[in-house]
Image (cartoon, rainbow, N blue to C red; front, side, top):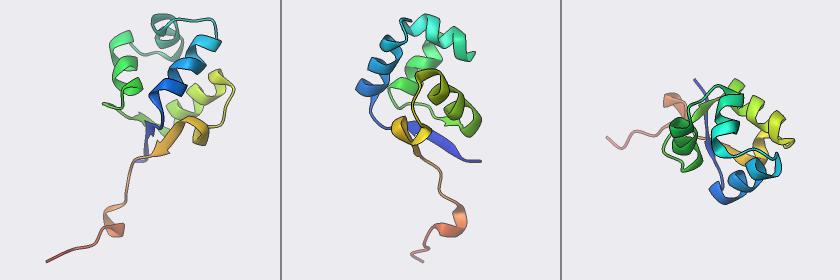
Length: 81
């Protein structure tokens, strides 16, 4: 499954503020708890592609503006054995 990590927490936080919502309000809007949003915001948790797309839509940016693809297919990893 592809997951996405916030690129820059400062920019993400600024975009949330520009919506006129605080973190708690934004978290409820996307179906998160404030605690989980904080984990995503501070790069301790990742989000799925549909959630990343929804967040980007609410923030009026593209997904790639605020998220990095944090998953790597196992077939793309190199064995050092």
